[in-house]
Length: 109
Length: 115
Figure 1: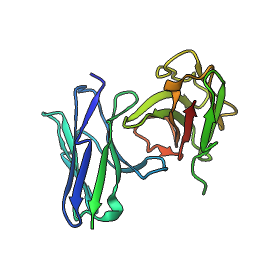
Figure 2: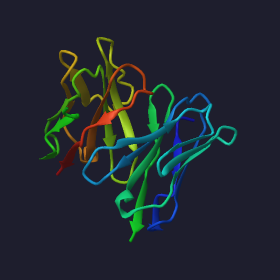
Figure 3: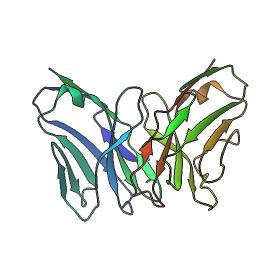
């Protein structure tokens, strides 16, 4: 019940396309849902976060969509760029942050 | 200002040896976290320090793992009698105050390899 399931494990997108990463959770007590971006050899960095009372949050090209009834949330990267190539982690707070398994995104020029 | 600093960046050691990993959090951050990241896996919570409160050690995988935080700043994660399954990247993060909804700022990790 403490798990956060993330998919896909890897994703290849053409430059200018939309990248979509999905996460699902079981614990309805989770109250904060951040996304982290990690480049090789670096630590994760907070990208964008949402609370469950909001259905969508947008920051630049990055959007979180949140479906409370389905217990799912997703990250959309619009106009994907080669510089977006990284590993993305979703997470959920339930006392402590529970991370998804990560999605390795590759944006082809 | 400086971010979270971890040392060493890489550590190779033989099975059975003890290792110490160091984390210098961002100045003024009262909360400090340790995570383990194995190949192809997400981040596994290990331990959490907040100010002078007793640490949350619920994520430590065995009694071979321990951590301390001296003076509310620098933290050391110690792994005794290392095993090959301990090979991973160990990440430290800090945040401004209590609560996991505060942004966590990560260091670049220590890549630990057990031969």
